Image (cartoon, rainbow, N blue to C red; front, side, top):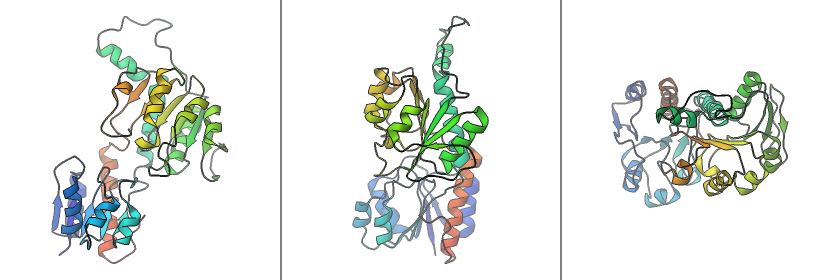
Length: 318
């Protein structure tokens, strides 16, 4: 009998769909990432595992389980840098993800962070909640007007394009981007040759690249040095794409105008230095935090499982 392990609580509809595939579905009630012994048990005791962000299936984990029972890691989420795909494939384990389902929700959060950061929304809310607001006046909390400005998208994939469309069609913004190759797009956009060139052109730098070794600390001191002093950095990608220490320095010295972050280098740890800065908007990784979105992600993972069980091509294998 096929045995499935879901490593975190998921929406009821997703769990019900999984149980329609087989009777032996175990849902782990702990909301924290798998511990080292649980990672090894996942490969040893289950045929299929539905993991998610933070479940670190590293090369060492696969090396420790010589003959894994598990044949599929059906990841819940589009990002899979917490899984060593090469090590999984070498062990005969297929890895899948859930692209598409997260695109619009993540793009919405990206634009929300742009607005919140530019218009000092989080700072203003803290002022009101603290009872320190003395009333409106013409020069109160002046921020950056977003409409008509220039946005620079780092990584013009599904999510980057969705953000760019919102900026162009919704806010009349001029779109620039940095990407490994030029893109054919349904809106005007100018490609920069280098990240620093892009950073120097725009009022907002929005990071939308996948996580992983290739993009770790892609955004660092050189990027911040190239940005204009009023410009804002927005990160809805993976936390370690941004060198957090360099970002803190850039914010503390006024090298850039502000930042909006939904992800962090060592989640859930957020440095005190970031939390102390008024010019930073901090969200607790809310990118896809809507019931219908998380349900769609889960059902896509279950579809991957169903195809695998049927011996068909897994639609979202990575």
